[in-house]
Structure formats: structure tokens, C-alpha cells
View 1 (tube, rainbow, N blue to C red):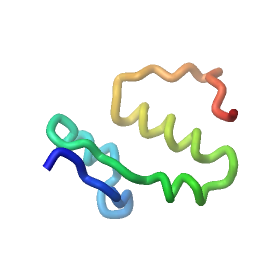
View 2 (cartoon, helix red, strand yellow):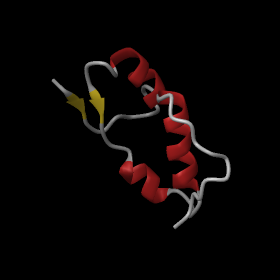
View 3 (cartoon, rainbow, N blue to C red):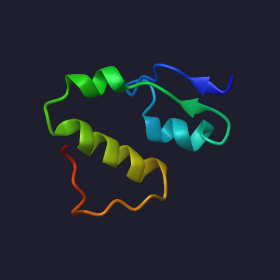
View 4 (cartoon, rainbow, N blue to C red):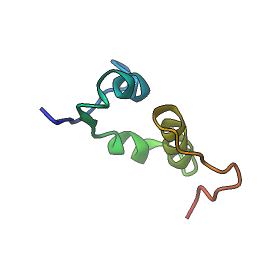
Length: 66
């Protein structure tokens, strides 16, 4: 297995999955969840996951809406 599709954040948050398995398995999914969020929430969620799962620096003034 090289990917886990339809990761359920309620069962295991993506940051925990990344910490435990990220060097071996890619976490896929979550797009449906993002589509149900209010307009500005998807960008905030993605930035939060990036901060938790990577060493990527996200500038606070970064544009989060198209």
C-alpha cells in the first residue's frame, strides 16, 4: 500500500496519520469535507494541516481566498 484514500479525521487526525505513516503512506481525501465548509474555511483548514504536517512556513499575510 502506498496511499490511504478517504482518511477520516474523526478516526485519526491527518497530522497524527502523517506523523505515524507519512514516510511510507500518502494520505488522500478530505476534499468533500472542504466543499462543505463556509467560503473562507477551506483555506484556513489547508494552511492548518500544512503547518501541522510539514515544515512549510506559511506567511500570515498570505492570501487565502481566490
